[in-house]
Image 1 (cartoon, one colour):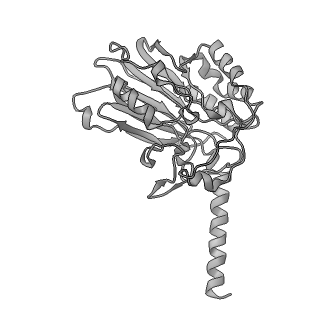
Image 2: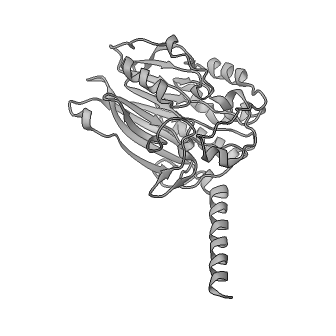
Image 3: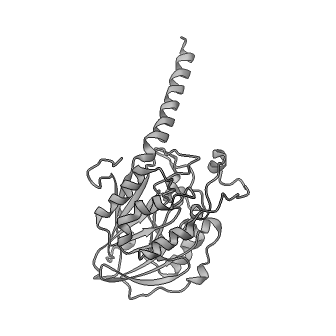
Length: 321
């Protein structure tokens, strides 16, 4: 075999191995991302927030269901779900099995586009070229009302276009949320205005981290906004990062914590699922986030949140399959 033939063979083998890894290994490499953020009022006690997003659950995804249920062992004070729980019209029982023990804890949620509508097959090139104007075609309606009713029955709060004060770890958290900006269902005017300044934490919740909704959250004085939707880019190139965010957020913020403006922090979850029509992840394992919130200090203006990723079992560096 000549040099060209060997090169082509090696390239083909590498490409095949990469696709096999992305489709068969990394997309079930459940990972816990942890960060400590100085966002609480002075003298407040630390609050542990578990951020779950983008489950995109199918009924038969038992490994994902077991892993998410095990997150209860982290003993979070508050669970925040930023949407896209469903990927199938029969997935509500699977989502409830996954969230099961967490539903006994204080929790809030908003929904995303794939709670309302099932995914449809798409040309992946269009995803990688988000500037191309394409007509959005919705899949079949999903039973989001059933999921909402079950979450509310267990005590979680639907933050869609409402502002609420809730007790978390004996302290007041003021929270407000939006319907999915990706579908342009958001109505920030419904929640506009300064949040409770006496609260230990002022929390904003949205599915898609569109700058047009992050800016008013920051202007109104929120401490922290949690979002999902981006899948962390889903496909990332080492040294370059996310290829796209599937929204107007810049690629550098596709996952993890960052500052938004002078005061507000943002956490974007890379999420735990994928579309069933694009079941691959590369250099971007599925994740949940455990955020330890602590009081601000005088030096916070220039401070970055500390964070790390761990394969779960949560610090042991292993995975639950």
